[in-house]
Amino acid sequence: MLLSLLLLLWPPQAPAASSLQVYSEFRRVGPQGEIIEQDRAGQVREILSPAMARNAFHSLRIVLQAPRGTKYTLHIGQNPENGLKLQLFRELPNPGSRIRDRLEPVKLPLSGEGSGTESFWLDVWVPAQALAQRVRLEAQLQDGDGWVIYPMEARVLTAIVPRARPPAGPLPAPEESSAAAAQHVMRQYICGDSGTSKPAPRSVRSFIQRNALQDAALARWLQLRWGKEKLGAAMAAAAGSPESGEWCSNPPASSPFGPEWYLKVRDFLYREASR
Image (cartoon, rainbow, N blue to C red; front, side, top):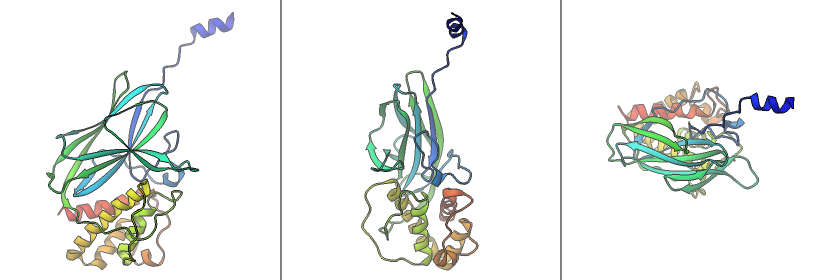
């Protein structure tokens, strides 16, 4: 009798609310929405006003959490409309692994049913002829109880990325840091190219490599003004290394910035190419 009375008086717990979070391409998440151990170091960059060069892909990670059984619709809005080309992929683990590396294309808007944490890779293509301007870019979740909005303001820069070269060398293992693929591309640029290889199957790692190859193409254009040695030293400094020679003899295994150290290199290249 006493237990029944206590249950009547105890206030019921409110159901968990739906949520959206946006991360950079270098912060992979686990089954509860937590950043996985390989990508956890350093302060997580807040994605509010991402810079985007033209004639290039830019990638963001959208983490959606909705109570089980909740029907939802995920939209990606932009204003002005249709200036950016968007494609969404669901991130899934490879067989025998818990790391979400496989990418399955899905259509926007995406309708689904809550099952805990879902992770999506958003590819944003900025055409070469796009206007250099600010574009409102929003992840929008409608779950029947209302809207959850993650607002961003993409900064389309004047920089135009030249055509990227094919990848060289195999991809790192999924269990390595997410920045490993970008580090390999940067090391090849600073120390010299070593041939090419066939494009790898679509995955988080291959898309990170693709984005880094775009940066290397931009660096080759900038070196006409800077000189390769000086530019390589500036890129290494942006990455937190005292000198570029270390990238050839003993590339850094980790960074106090975590895997997002590479974004400092990209920021530098974009800034110089937009002058």
